[in-house]
Length: 138
Length: 94
Image 1 (spheres, each protein chain N blue to C red):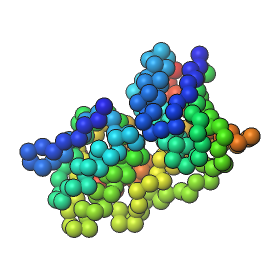
Image 2: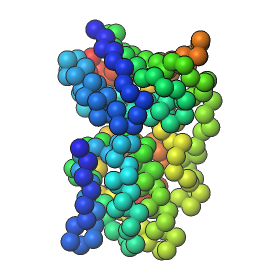
Image 3: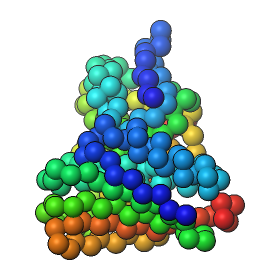
């Protein structure tokens, strides 16, 4: 079963987004690990769209389970392209004096999921994510 | 829900969920630390990159004056995020 909802383009929507995700996670009886990871992934992708996409409409989030996979789509309409796959990588091994805050979220997302895809068509940006559940959550 | 408070000994305590909507609230306290100390994560359930950024900024500023933050009692999920971000090399973790 999938859940889909559209949220206002605002960081203030995060509370509603976490509630939306929580309902899905409870119904699917998922453990703490994937719940934490998917909260993180959704927050980073959503806030990235809020910060960098210039648009006026809402951002829709759809989450569903297919066997041992959790699938997620974020869709933002009427915006300019920004390919997250080409976002610059941060060097996480640098000493503290050479590190700058910011830019870390997308990099962490990429390392937390099994697949992430970006599509831009007719001024609509879609980011799709897949993550396999560990054995104890299947 | 997110709360940040100073203990009597000057250490900082975080509770709840530190997401991007709570970044400013965390910054109000962490930007004013002026000495080495411990940040207690015992009741912190969740953190995103926004929270990591605030912590990094505080650590950089303090290390410039010879001080350093230590982080105690983090849960396993937050520890994984810290390790992926390389923050285990920037903060002393208990």
